[in-house]
Length: 481
Length: 99
Image 1 (tube, rainbow over the protein chains, first blue to last red):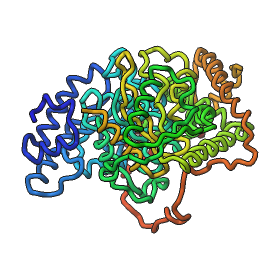
Image 2: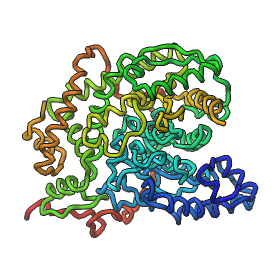
Image 3: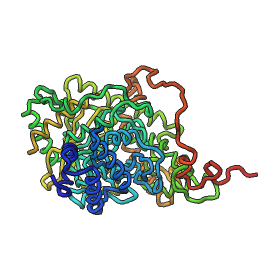
Image 4: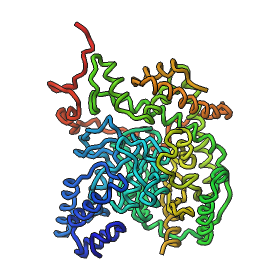
């Protein structure tokens, strides 16, 4: 294999083989990927910051270990990008916001620490909607991310840069975050694999908090196996995140290779009513393919699905209004000079936050304000119980739930930007996964007549990532040459 | 339904957000539209439903307790490095208490 021609289609196993066969060194690979990414990035605006120094240092360490027959981690030499809401020590982390434009974190997120410990080479930080709030990456203070498959269309969001970099080939794998669909929707729009693991499967330590009870870190990759390797490298209990889970981590790569024959999969009627035909046809064909592989398909109901959007926008904004209170001009943000402390807070926040973040802080503050708590927040938490219960009941009869990721493929840049409710409705199929905490993912399953990628969404029981990956892997193997 | 501009200004004050007149007017429309959508939750009878206070938790109650041992933390200099204004080891803000 020869660089740089191979860069856009590199996989983790190709990197590993290339390094062990001495086709290239980790340093040569890092240099080549950085050069490629820097040259290609203006097309999509996926990267906000490149981390050349850090990448070359990590790559040199991998080369030394290989030379002396030392530890070769699961991600040795693999060029990886990190969404800019995940902190990296000494490397600017903006959250896509003007308010943090100069923020240099003094520590690494646990996920970042674990990926680097496995030999990953972090080449840069990826664009996203401001504080991960958005479905199109148009809410970034640093400009939208364009979809590599159709440059006049959105990448999806909020992890738009993470999906676009993998689709464009400017990273082998990336990580992003998902609070209401922010991994699966851009993965679907850009035609890559994206995983939202079980809540608590990956530590949130160092993930800048948006809505703490809904936030997840997860991987993006060009194939299911690479996504599984990255997930496995990050997963597991972390003392620094008390909500991280103790549950043992399965050997995803081994288990996903088991055949799917005999697995029962459910199609929730609520996710197919009103779905547009171009997406519906592609999803139907994917389901048939799984049926051909021996899955038993059943129609099921998740009756509270239609309440997910309302439930989500109460809980997510309430938590956000509290989490974002810390950006006040004192400790790590820009500051707008004012005579009084109160004005300094207000002016800094008024200047530093973009329109969508302000809208969500306002909604969250409103629903938590005196007299409204029971009517909104408590009610939403009760409805959340019902939405989670829907999944638990479904999983008494099926091993997995299949659904579309988005009602439509990637839309045009600017198309929905003036209508917040219409934008929120584009998340209608992904919110339930975050609300119930179950693992879910998007795997590419075809294209619209215009050639826009469409993803199939797979949900399984809490901590049953192995079955989810098994369905995705078997589907991928059956459909790709 | 629109949220009145008075209500918007009151909430903005609670949230420590300076909004322009134009933003207040836009917010009154946008929040009104979203709150109207959210009203659909009232159609659900949730009298006997427990609110979901914890996403999932299968470990025992003391699982997250640890020994109280000091560990290396972020240094004072690192903690102050991102501050717009600091001095003598502290964050500095506009004067709060008048002499």
